Image (cartoon, rainbow, N blue to C red; front, side):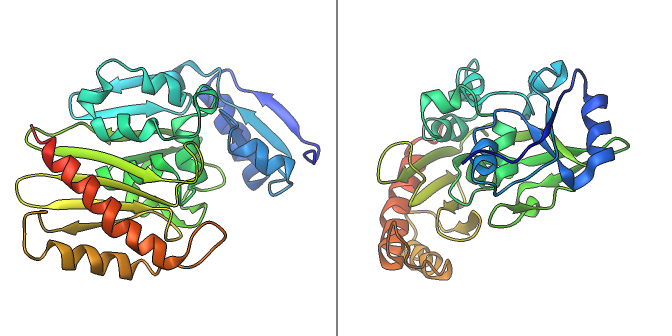
Length: 275
């Protein structure tokens, strides 16, 4: 199929893009990498009257590291972040997650913020942002606000972003000393959407496990350390609480088994990586 007719605006600065969103509201969509948007346009699941291209706005192409967080601008492509200096040291979970995002060709076009905006429950970057406790930076013509990742998504491909807002950046906390990070997933083929994706953080006192691909949006939970006698029961309860269901790709039982097995492996990898 082909998309319905739309107008196109190539924004030269943030003010121009934000003014267009202010004027058009829900009839406008932000165009960055287009890897999520164009399939929706072609299937006519989205019918905007105006596409606002922000890839030529210089301030959106920045990656800033203030020592505590990595701030990724709206125009930063996934491949650019993947090649960022010392990413595997500054935030190893993010580096590991990026390797699972689509293919090299799609990462060369797709943006980090675009993936967060799309809010696919199987998406690797929304899962990493949630598990790490990152933030989404939203902006309108008149104001800015910051939402924690666990408050941003409201359901499958649904978020709290307003019609006149754009995601100007997302921020990920950098790695903490004495903490291990890991990311794993299983799909039918590498690059396919995850049947189950797992992101884990392990420090001296607890485990944080994030799960994607099972519920309507990524979910995380604090668990005991993998050496605790309560660990297996807590992980099993997490698997049941996600209420995995049968679909074309896997049964609910298979997904629960994956959470137990892949989740444990991811947690053990993170524990082994503690510095």
